[in-house]
Image (cartoon, rainbow over all chains, first blue to last red; front, side):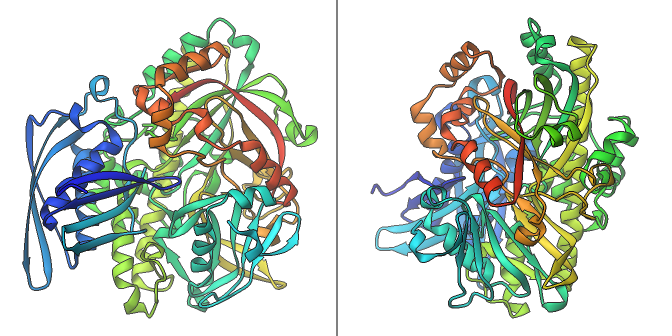
Length: 143
Length: 476
């Protein structure tokens, strides 16, 4: 397994996202890419517009869900797809705060060929684990 | 799934007796082959549902059940508020009130000959479909609240359809008890440009031909004849429902312990029906049901416009509109006594028998049409709720075939252009903005619906009335 990366894992009706990175922020950036890949090939998306996003949660697992839901909401109301993610995590009082700059562009149906909307991040099989090599995240998203 | 873990009560009824935290039995309908193909985690999820507080009767899995999140897809469970029963956001799902609406067109397949492409193009032009699409209706804050309270009845009042459509819609087109104030600003924001949009994934609009009659008497009761052309719409509450589901799921998962609920799986997130949180979710979820009913009503209007352009002799009248992701308050007889219960159906449709007081009066004499979606290359079915089904499943049935293959696997196996060409050679027109989406929705990526509907019939849930084949499909 490389230092940072993502893959999809099989779920019968929906799609599982698996992402990893040397720290939680890096793993969450990979989770963003895995989410975009549910909809289209990330390399088809040009990072021409910058959007600032933020969210918070009490633990890393719920932070993963909040992050994915924040991206899903931003994609839906802005009609955009994202392919660049810069995530910073800060913690205070037992709460994880995430701030992010994401890069993307409005949906171009001819170029992106977007297959499916993501409805939301589920809590089934949710994982956020820190090991020797960094963080491993898993979440099933409903499509 | 290992069927030896179950006790067989009949050829199509399998029982999981309570073990561990289970408060009641799990009952699965289907034949040994269907159960053998089900994921082991269906049993695990059914056992988890059976462990929730206030559950009444068994936790059921329909013949098309598959591994979902929290509840299995194809799961049915009823809860009594007076017995500590719960409402579960995970038991309804993200696409609240996703459902199917089928219309008579008043024309036959023969009338369509030579105009298939023109009608497909008009439908694709008029009905926004796919990721990034917007509707032509943009709701103000006040209009949004009116829509959430009024459902299809609001849409008809705005000029989208006929008052008589409401007689053939669940809840007569307007879910009572909706509370727009419980719907978050984010959910409303997500919906304001999405009214009258089809969505993506497995959602579709299909022009279908009645290819076979299985039950002539009921088909006549439904006004269906061989060769008839029907229009079927499959979609839900769009971004609004997805947002309500996401927010409630997280909130209920965090607060369950405060209500003394030990969740075996966070995705079963729930709150007591009598709690403020449970009541708030019910108010928001019922708003989402109205959103779905309004959405399908608006798409009905757009479909009528497309037909008027291409087949002006057509006259589209609603057969029925039924949702398959809901929690509804219903009256059911349990152990000889009538009880008001909150019935969750997740990926399961109502299948009410003739005479049911839960059924819209226009159909009480013949029974409820059960609309089962297939794929754009195979078949769909209309069934009818069978006598005695209330006692078997709280009046429920399967909702479709379910996927045989994941989206990633399907994309590796097929190219969208090839799927379209092959279907066209078989006389089926498909319009979609995404060839990747078409590949992921390839007909062979789904299980055979025939086995599922045969099992539903043999289980005494719903009986086949007609078989439909697709002629035109609009995919998101």
